[in-house]
Image (cartoon, rainbow over all chains, first blue to last red; front, side, top):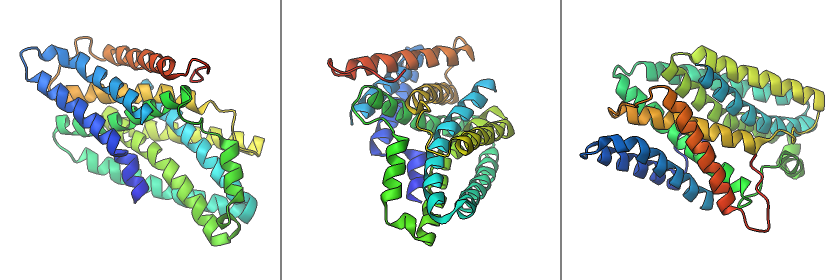
Length: 55
Length: 238
């Protein structure tokens, strides 16, 4: 069961990285410049991958 | 569809190679018949889970919600694999070594006891297969090609099984980290695309954006490997 949950959600760091990136994208989507969300989400996720590689 | 099938095939290949190492180690203790029996039981569970997962997801009436759920799971999976591949490529983590894994398994006490060994084979196949299951269900349901995705996973299993039957030793020459890097970038591209689209974002380039995202994550990942590689060492990801 633990393996199943870990496969689906990853660890706490992964969850925080993805949740943070999506939240940032949602905020930009509702800002005056929603078009920037398409650049922001990939940037946040790449930064997240960089963080996960280190931790 | 082709991108989804290739991604599934590559993901499954990596996971089946890792599962094969476990099955091989167990087979040397309790025989091939029992070890393959444990693997087949795990595969049956995975097939059942695929059916249940697909059924549940296809019952979601709202396409945007389905797209968001699938996108989030793919993003979680992709960012994890890309991060891991970058860490291993830069030497921050040890590369996955099938030979060392095999030796460690053979040295464990449990593997010499029939029941425990059977469970090791079953759990190994099931846990490695769960990642394949996630990709098959997520990409299959979202692209409406679950059978093609499942077929790609089964083809990968056949390829690894054939290679294993011929080699009769761990498949340590498979470039697992390179495949994980490519698959991580690919899955993260699918995840990013679908998460934003489900939130109402309109990608200017349409489906071509997937290629652009893949390029971004691929090149970005390579840059991270270079950045994280100590000056005295060499990057190994590609």
